[in-house]
Image (cartoon, rainbow, N blue to C red; front, top):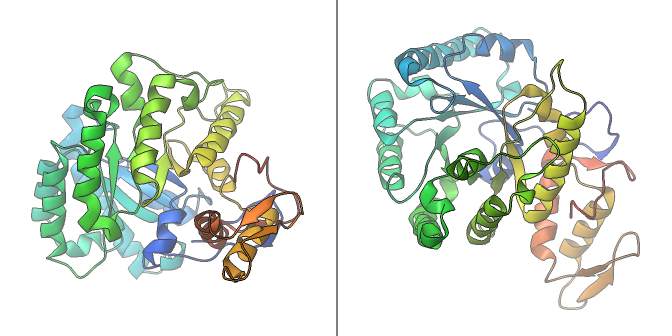
Length: 358
């Protein structure tokens, strides 16, 4: 997989990556994680046809997009999809390096356990990991136990992506206790956690509120407050992915859906989120483009990381218009280089307002 763009000239292209690439790279490469209901029958055909060129990752969903009465049907279709993917790779219909990263969102630890117990690990050989919804103190230990048991049965590397969306995380009176519990629980799994994900739709539903196409999640103060606490606890050690944008392109829509998404993406990036949950292919390119690094950021990051900190503490930036401090900006610089490695560097000033992206 490699990100390419039709409308943005690049100073430096992003790299090729696949399921076996290092975790330090993959955690930045999720971009827009495209959720697909697991009962869909056309998923493999769409991947073979390359219908979604900016799709670097997909999540086969067994949870919210599946009706309670069709769970078993979705489970059967999931295994058929995985089998067809494996066959397509073996017959040459698919190239391993062009495959998106594939994840599975399970409904519960019980379903996760039953699903793994009744299948061979080989069926999951093209799966990169598992998403755990409603990840909190009541569900997380059991999910991780099932994950541990599965890892003992295979030498393949699998990752997890916890989704923080429970009422106990949203509500102020239990939030910090929950977040700190999860943080401690995940410490032994740090190298297996690819992203921390958030469920803004579930959070909003607790209060019966919903943002419209002109509003970002940061305008909803209740939710923004919770997202800030999640970032505070997790974003120093993990890549945190932004919440879903519920609007997308259709024959009934004008361009407001895209304008709203771009506005929210800029604020995601400013606040520390990288990537976003995605529910429609029309969103994919905008999410990926938001991660392209400006030439100014790239050159400044290189300078910061390549300057002898014993000799120099501060230096003017690439455009001679901002301060670069070697120590305080070092973590920012490392993040910029990782993003540049995956998504590329824009030529000249071909990115959007970089004051929001830095």
